[in-house]
Image 1 (cartoon, rainbow, N blue to C red):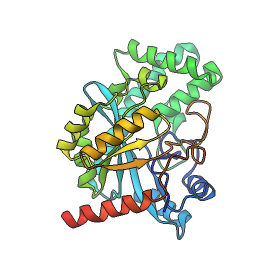
Image 2: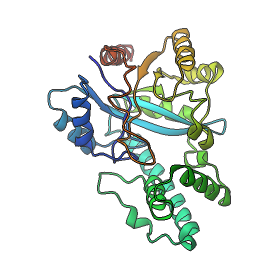
Image 3: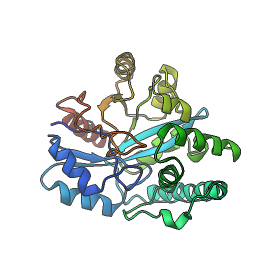
Length: 293
């Protein structure tokens, strides 16, 4: 069965609802579904997704935003239990920091004429990704959604505040792996490459090589997202080789956010480099891990 193993909703920085995401998954011809929102999962989110999915199998997922060697790292978690107390505490920590940094950005941009405060950014969805909603609204009011100008001014603002983008997610990769395992799931490194992706490079995403992944494996990493829009053909080959070397699960996903002027066009359904049996592989790996435990 085929699954796009990496996508988002408006519970984080996506632009479509839970139900709209499930509907798009179905219309794109996938046989199973997951949602991997940034630093968020909840029992209500999973229930709504399962209700919308009906008979379609659904894997509870999350994407943690972490840091390693000063670079940004994204870590996908699958089959995680949204009722995990430690995971809930982490989600609250992330949102508290997100609110604090967003408040600082609002005050910095207020002289430029922005017309909103922190609480104007609250999302109608289950969860608010304050910094992303700030970026989108600031971009609309000041730059008419010009992506290049928005990114440049955002990074300049962080510099003025004495920060880097990685400072928004100071939690170490090892802690993220432990957090996912503690919630009953398994951990997959998201888009480890992207050397040719200008936005990823400017934001400071860590460009992973074999020693990085070897270190993560020592900490318990389960898999690598080998195929994704951020990877070149050479990177896909490289990370597939590394995954084989360490017997890691290989996943694939569009990293679709739904399509808007800042996060880009809708990639789900257009990104097709996904194995037909990916869902089966993910379920098999999950079952094996439970047997080992």
